[in-house]
Image (cartoon, rainbow, N blue to C red):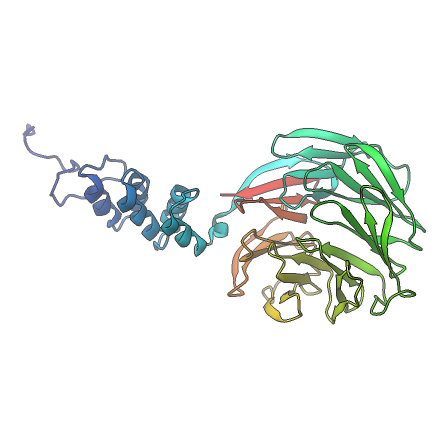
Length: 398
């Protein structure tokens, strides 16, 4: 039978008609046609509508914002990708209530080395290469910044500043010492601890270094001169640690130093006025401070994460599923907006995203290729960078 060319076919789009628009078809009729497709019961049609909606100004934005609450995760993800980066207040408000971390996936895997250390935004990394030198790299530019010569025998750990210029290396020995390297050149070698140094931390501006260890002392150094600024010793001050210090962390403004020991003791020091610290009776095998400096997260045995204000009030307690036999969490990181916390467990081979307000698990990644020992969010929260025990750096995003 010959088709009448004046009559529409089954999948022709007819203005004012009732035919279902195919997902791959062109939408006619302006924003009205987009709205009609967005009302479809088929997710692929709604995805196509969201992509088309960006052409139609405010009306199109309204469709995109509505799509963030669609029943289909595919539609939600499409809407988020269309809206992120937009400056309109309505969009910012909608995105502030939308948690996109559940859509994260591993985007890239980079070969690195052992003992990976990341700066606070995951843009710079340091690692122990196969020839035992420490390499400092720019992950954005994918280039080597400099290399630190190997230390002959002893174990070592290290941290890197946000700009990648400063690397602090802790040489572990009967009497440990610390080296400060700037741009690949050794500037200072710091002695003073009686016993092994177990924790080192740089202030966010990289002007101040804190060290702590088996002698229960915390020493604070000026990075530029290498001079000792403050010695927090049980012999000199009240309220100091009674056991070996294992973790140190500066607040974003550098004014508060958080320390933890191998027993149930976390201390918050206003080190600049040299006052007696605030003591929290809890375990702190891992420490992280929120970007606004208002919350502290601690990790302990059995995988429990406690989030509390800096005055000790508990905000949230995060517990893994009972069937997961976590030993202890190796690393914790807050998202830039402070609404999400990510926890990495290199032993259980998992990365978990938690909503701090609700205490609910958003997303969990597990697998033999997941073994994080350090984590950092990008400055905009769009990526998560993980240094892994398998000598790789993984970049997660959407």
